[in-house]
Length: 494
Ligand code: NAD
Image 1: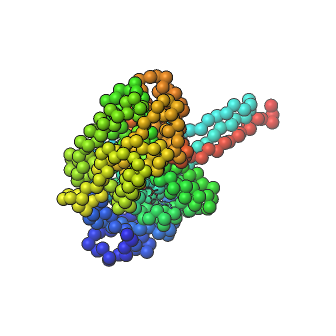
Image 2: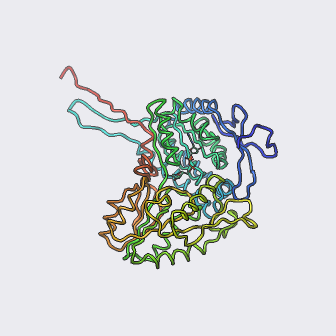
Image 3: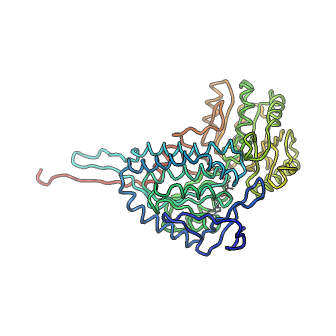
């Protein structure tokens, strides 16, 4: 999709933000921004080169020298002012995401609010970047300093473009770093607008927005020797490639927020109406299933299985597919043709593997749907826990349901995948709930609840779902390096 200047002259090229100024790719290359619901090219944006990354790093190093000398309170004030301006532009930002990634407006509207909350949360937490004193002896003092890295980078995915771009700069900036954001090449517009909104609020050079292909701009960021702290949100395969590439250059602190194949487990004593709603909600059909935390494996006790599947199917069938800009739309377009093809291929795989299609499984191609990537919310039942449908992350609107017979069986199925991001359990038994929360291999567990992220709690995965924790104080501290200082003030006169 790379185009040279002039090949698509009907659309403007939206600039990147480097060193507080507008910037274009050093070789002039651009990428097209598509609306996946209509197939229209809506804009062009720079396809950054390694030279552009160098410029962002140089600007970041210069800006971070001043920034780390500011008081924590002053850094908090900058984050608060950024939160305010985002709040004022929330509707516009939501629309940019809708035309870039195809999710319904009523869902994307929430994302700017979540970014605002994160900026305010870290603005308030800024005084907690503090070390500790360690008892040594009467005339010696040992203490720690928590110091910023300098320039850090955040590489983010396509599913919540603005929410990730804006909320994920809060902790690095609060901790005293400069930050480079690299949005997905499929959804870069709202991050570019963030760079524009931040002008005059965030000191020049402290925040750079670098757009372009992962394998070029992203790789140049990962391999840049001056970027020692990288945080990646995306697929497990890219995460592992990034870990390897970073390690080939230098010793770097790389945290990874990766994919999931998360179980939602319903025991026979559960409040079934609640559990049915949660099974639908947890799948995030409202973002076409494109959510890392989606509970895309549904495990239901055999005694209630048939009744549960039937009730869930009715609820899913009622969801309205439509244009993402329509207020009544509940499920929109998949982000691009690659993801669309991937989702359809998994539907074929499911049929071949002998799973039973309960609802959905079809694409919409008539009328308003003709040029987009619309797949109906899909439920397969009787899925073999070892099948590809049950094992692999689809990142689309396809839910795989399977029965289980008892606690041990449920746990073995729940833990029998390479991933371990979220898990949810529905039961009225305190004992079952606590055992499950203890035994399940996941970084975030809900009991009689699903999907919710709570500010101040730590989110992240185990196994191939990732490394490191975000959204709480851990994220803030992860942008600092601890230095131990040992002071001997013993007097020779004593
Ligand atoms: P992706 O891995 O394809 O891309 C993510 C980002 O990495 C993009 O900005 C891309 O340009 C960049 N990238 C790609 N190759 C790169 C390389 N070699 N070097 C450096 N950067 C590179 O993921 P995606 O398709 O955008 O997002 C979907 C994935 O993200 C899913 O697996 C989903 O589960 C995961 N995800 C995880 C979380 C979480 O918090 N755990 C949240 C959202 C999404």
